[in-house]
Length: 283
Image (tube, rainbow, N blue to C red; front, side):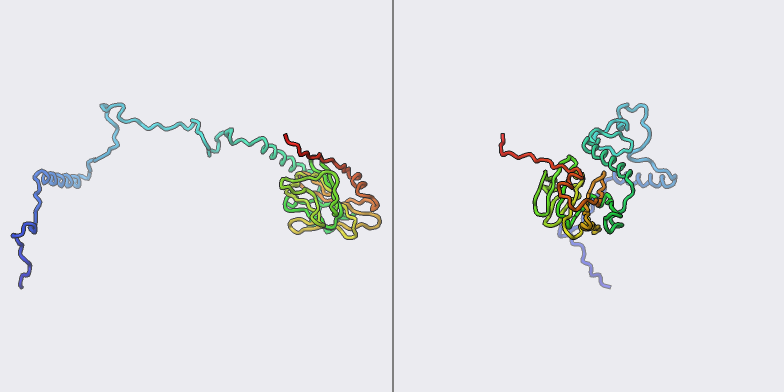
């Protein structure tokens, strides 16, 4: 077999293989390391290297190792505390206005619990002499708009005893009640009387009068409705919407058909209030 390997050329210096010379001291260190490893393997014990956890000797300096300072749990911590038994800070205490709202809600809940049982709007088809009253739930009394169709006149009274009236032709008397959204608390939209129930806490009561020959109807946001019969046999029904606590109660009150609107106001103790004139004078 012919050896085709090229011989090492010694005439070119940079192509020669250089062999690194190993110092004698490093050779001895490698030998000692191998010997110590063999001893550890035989004895089964390993010499500790690096960091050890032994207690410091008495000769060491007392300031050499100082334990880290751990904050006391009883120390006050600024900011938000999520502990269950942590005392409430003054910043998290409710404001007087919010506390008054909560107290008012509790009072209204207690007042509603003392009311006598009344039919619901889903259980009543018509308000008449046999069934004169129904009561809306707290949800039905606060959501959407109370729509009263078929009425010809309405009168209202707010919790501040501001009284006013209006009819379907646009005539008004007394003082209107405007809500925060610049909308009338009680009023007509074309031929329909409306009460926005989101502002129901500003309303004390309202009456709806029907001078026509067709019945009145009341409808709420979920589609439930009830009818009030038209005038007949010398009697007309006035629809009284009265707020008790946070519930709205609807009543059909019979009055003589010959009574005028002013007589009906007097019967239900509606005295029109005067609205103060607005001056253009500015200081």
